[in-house]
Image (cartoon, rainbow, N blue to C red):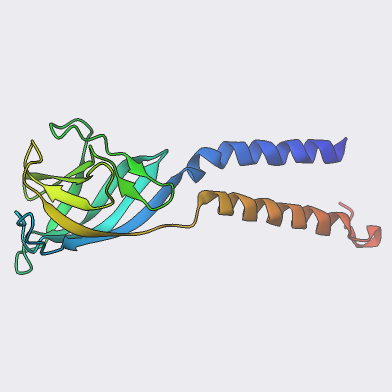
Length: 177
């Protein structure tokens, strides 16, 4: 009965922290590809930082943004979904990570920027145009974090090892209160 209660307690603890395992922090960097077709509307644009994803939606976005290589650094701030770009701030975490067609919007220096991917393409683009007719293709690199499930698995294994080690102690080593 005692083993059964310990197992139930372990399952309850794992279930309690499982939602936190769905949130992951990604590092990113992007830069203008200098593509002549279409001409870049933001030549030399670049940025880097981190963003948090919970259940496939970006919940925070911070970093440093440069409009040109010689421009001063601007702080990036996440803008909520549906700001006129039809953005949903969705980030596909399966396979190669990418933003969908609606993309993500961040603000830097008083201007809203939209990062998005054309349907059927893996090319990330950035624009300030509400219609998205003019844009700049960027190289967008993401550092994928260790999945939260590995943390859960590791902590469960540690708990199991601790319980087994505790159970296997000789009775003479137990201290009386």
